[in-house]
Picture 1 (spheres, rainbow, N blue to C red):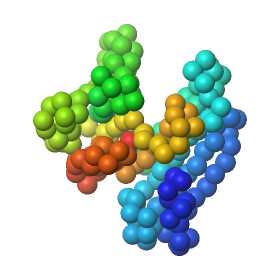
Picture 2: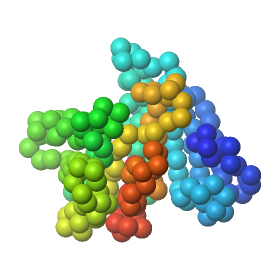
Picture 3: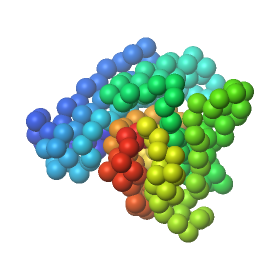
Picture 4: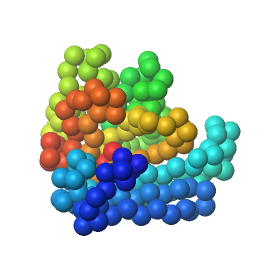
Length: 203
């Protein structure tokens, strides 16, 4: 969102809103077709949630972040008809052996453990590894799986690269535009998006 603000030069293309909810700082950016040309970010919605003072022992802060995450995930998907029978594919990107890149596989592990407590799984979970490990494009794996199971929604979880250390472990970004694995560190891979998978993709 900082990059979007720096490149903002036409109010018709980008709408930025910021507010505070309890301790969570929320930044919502709407990019339309004009804005997509201006800042080279895909048309869609970007929501950043941040608690600048969050620490690993701050249970109250994590609880507030969780509430905000749940709310804005629901808001991001309000136009998608999700029912109890809907198939939702959750994909955890990243390299489990490298701590800064392991959040995706860790989320899949945690969700799998949680789902094992229920008779009927709520999500289809997948952690494909990274291209350097498999030799194949992650996007191709996800596309093949999507074609096979035909979910109503794909949710991608990945580590978020940042230019400021103050954001580490304190920030979550949500978007309905999909994702380009490795894009934050200059290792651009094939994107995972609605245009590629033909189903809605959130990241």
